[in-house]
Length: 93
Image 1 (tube, one colour):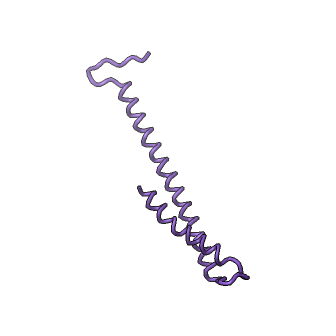
Image 2 (cartoon, helix red, strand yellow):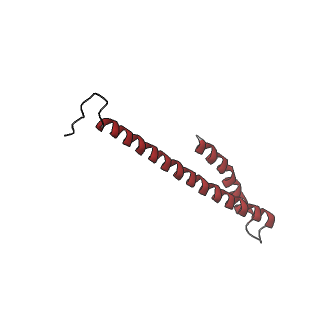
Image 3 (cartoon, rainbow, N blue to C red):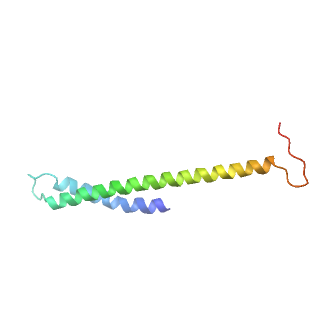
């Protein structure tokens, strides 16, 4: 859900950057505006930074999930192989 909100926030930036890119990147074209081009560049850089942060966040969350799953597997394995008090150990085939 968190990623959906972040991605939906990035989409308008992408659309605006493309619109500015198509309309204002040629000095010979009527309507050329260098300040809009600077704004477009800044928006593209911001979008790239946000995408990079999103990828890092996803990678960190994925690694944390993998660690948690491994810990659960290890704990379950110990419960299976270690006998409870008063019980005989389980024999593995």
